[in-house]
Image (cartoon, rainbow, N blue to C red; front, side, top):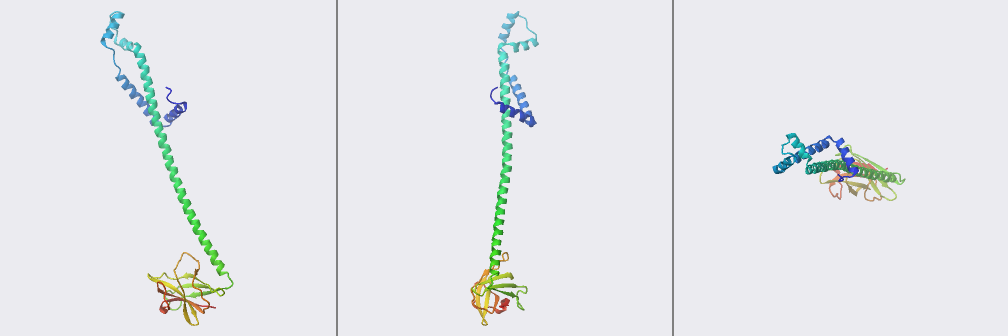
Amino acid sequence: MGLASPEEIAEFERICREYPEVLEARDAFERSLEQRTMEQVVDPPASVREKVFARIGGEKMPIRRQVESKSEQPGATGLVISMRRTRFVAAASVVLLLGSALLNYYYYSQYKVFSSKYDQLVQEQGRMASSNQGLQTKLEEYESTLGLIKDPAMTIVKMPSIPNSPGPNSLTTVYWNTKTHDVYLLVNNLPFPAAGKQYQLWALVNGKPVDAGIFEINQDSINLVKMKNIPQAQAFAITLENRGGSPTPTMSAMYVLGKVS
């Protein structure tokens, strides 16, 4: 009836073909609208009928002819056309509304799916970036450690566990630069200290222990830990002290010891 564009009509027909429930809803609405319209039809007053009968001869027409006569009245033709027009417009409006609702639901569902996939991709990208950053950090640690170890002035002091050590499988390595006197410690294997305790490195200089610093254990990294500068030493050892360190080593809590070659 001119209320929809050709594109909308074509889309409406396509939806009806694709979704049987839409077609069924359209047909059901059309039948309901037609039924309600017919129920509201008003018969002409009896006086009008009598005048008509009097004009054509005074005889009553058969019931079937009466019904046909009603439809032939000038006002009836317009009423039928109006009814059909109203029924079509209303049905088209309802079906278009249903089609629009279905399309909106479909596009909204697709939006939710793609939105969820997009969020997953963003999270995965974040995890990959974090993983790459972790790998980059470890690579930098490896390169830094390798550069220190390859220095010709670096003396390597292996420190295995001593007899009666609290940690029989303990092992650490000291890298001591004889030119710069820088000391680096690599923890190969040490038990995690108890609460309130901390490991401390000692340098034995002319038979006397010299504090070389305290350190934490990080099993996830092979990075060398820089300790205190030591000008000279004959050996290195590690003891377990109260957190914060001690001015003198606890000999009963010595884990490892290594002599400088």
